[in-house]
Amino acid sequence: MKHEFLETIKVVDGKALHIEYHQARYESVLDEFHASKYHSLEKLLTDAPKEGLFRCRIVYASEGVLCVSYHPYVKRSIEKIKLIEVPAAFEYAKKYANRRELDAFFEQREHCDDVLMAQDGFVKDTTIANIALLREGVWYTPKSPLLKGTTRQRLLDNGKIEEVQIKVDELYEYESLALMNAMVDFDIIQNKSIEDIVC
Image (cartoon, rainbow, N blue to C red; front, side):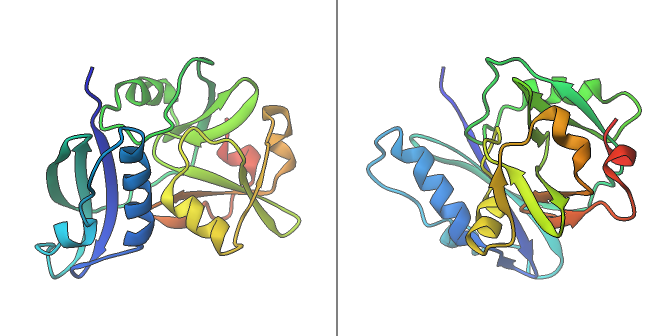
């Protein structure tokens, strides 16, 4: 089966943000297929809308870029997250365009806004973001997320967050939670304890 992959890039007034991190991930995916050439993602985005906040969606496969589209972005409000266990066999190490399994996990959210996936007893990601947890003034992110997001990598490179294995039974030892992805950057869920956020 042919896999299609996805890059989601934040575009503000025609400028693609942190494009170098998206380029690096795109190339790392193609490297696994021994691709002979890469596109410059920045050059693909020369027709980006010149005003406003947009989510650029690039769909590609080993043989090339399939689609580039722009969508006005409205942030989704996330205040409560349901903790669920996902199968040990589930993997999402690459940002696949097919989100069928993630969508099925999302449907388990009940009255919450999203799910926080755990696997083999360790905390991973939500369906749309990596996470960071605050303890004693330091923000920690799971060392082995399902997907190593571009914002997560940038914040690690900048020393803003640190990696650590986070067990499910240690989750409530932390003080606060932030979501990380290309669109929200580092978004702290304000004025709520972990007990109030994760159910």
